Structure formats: C-alpha cells, structure tokens
Image (cartoon, rainbow, N blue to C red):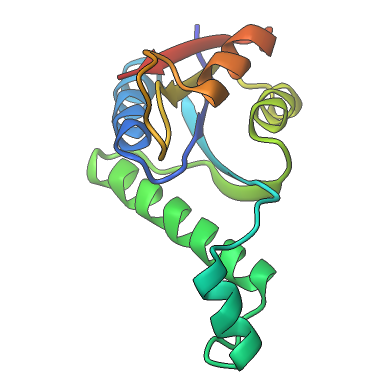
Length: 146
C-alpha cells in the first residue's frame, strides 16, 4: 500500500502531469502527497546578474531562486487542490537534484516518487538526466510520467 508520495516539481509540463498523476494515486490509496523543489547551485542568466549589479533588481540571487521555488511549489499545490488533494507539505531545498530527491524521499518515508520524465530542458532522449539518475539511485519505487 502507498501511504506517502513524493512529487519533485520544477514547473515543467512533465512536472505538472506528475502532480496530476500523484493526485489520482493519492485519492485511490488515501495517501499523502509531499511536494519538493530542489534549487540547484546554478548561476543566474547574465542579464539578470547585470540588473542586480546595476541596482535595477534589488533581490539577491538567493532571494530570486527562493521566490521562484515558492511560486513553483504554490502552482503545484494549487493544481493538487483542484483535484481535491491537499499537499501534506511543500518544501524547497538546495542541492544536486537527483541525490537530494532520493535522500529527501528516504528521510520522509516516501513509498513512491512520482516525477516527470523530463524537466525544463527537454532533449532528444526519452528520459531526462535527473529522472534517470533518480531512478538509478533510488531504493524507493519511482513512477515516471510523460
């Protein structure tokens, strides 16, 4: 039986479909849903860095990333709520995405990780790099959503 479902979200179309699939499973299994966004340590685009340097944008890099993460989580939570499922938790954390997702799932006692097949940067492969790494590293069952 599935009691806790982790859904890593990045705002992509695949991620939104994963949220909807998790909602369907949660309703059928009476499971809870945890939403997670992992903030990678990537630099901001040059244009945004220039706006920060000039004072045009006053938020720090960290504030921009955290604000974006919260928006992604809020959007995913609203999508869940539209299906009648209330998220148990919504959290963003920093780290390398795949390893962080697997570790978080283990720490929270997730029975299933439901994730999009690809993220924000789709490519010619059927499965994106992060999804592939999560599947390869996770001792927890994973459901890949296209």
